[in-house]
Image (cartoon, rainbow, N blue to C red; front, top):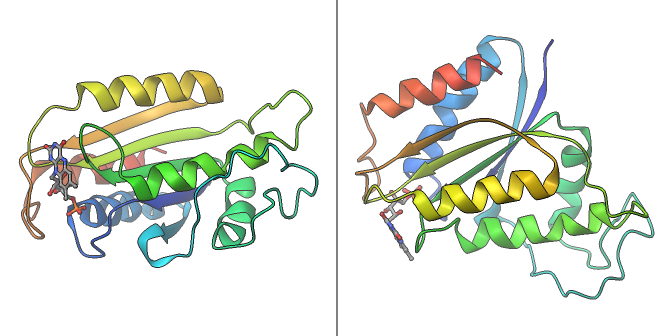
Length: 181
Ligand SMILES: Cc1cc2nc3c(=O)[nH]c(=O)nc-3n(C[C@H](O)[C@H](O)[C@H](O)COP(=O)(O)O)c2cc1C
C-alpha cells in the first residue's frame, strides 16, 4: 500500500550530504508508489517550543505560535512515515531538526493523554566521523516514547564537505530503504 512520507531535513546545507541521502531515499520510495514531501527546515521560519503547555486546543493550529510549523502540521497529521534527516552535530540531530521536533509536542497536546499519532520512522544521517552511538540511543528512546515503529537507519560516516557523499554505498542503502517502505 502506498504511503505518505514526510521528510524533515535538518541540514542547513541545501545540497549537502543529508540532502543527497534524502534524494536517494525519495527516489526509492517514489519508485514503489509512495508520495514524499520534504521540508527544508533551514529555509523555514520555525521558532523554539515555549514550553507553555498551552497548545492542543485547536487541531488545525495545535501550537499557540503561528510560524512555519503551520505548513508541517497538516502534512505530519496525514503522514504514515516520518523521516528524520540530519547531519550529526555534536553527537546528535541538528538544532534545526530538534527545534521542529519539539514543536510536534503541540500535536500530542490535542490528546487528553498526550498520545502521539502513530507513525513509522526512518533516520537518515551524515557525519564526518563514524560515532553514531549516542544519536542511535537517543533515536531509539524517542521511538519508544512516541510509540513509533523504526523502519530503518542509514548512518553515513566519513563525509564532511558538500559532495563528499558522491558515489558512497550508503546512497544505495538509502534508495533501497526508500523502496522498501
Ligand atoms: C556544528 C557542527 C557539529 C558537528 N558535529 C559533528 C560530530 O559530532 N560528529 C561528526 O562526525 N561530525 C560532525 N560534524 C560534521 C558534519 O556532520 C558533516 O560535515 C556532515 O557531512 C554535514 O552534513 P550536511 O552536508 O548534510 O550538512 C559537525 C559539523 C558541524 C558544522
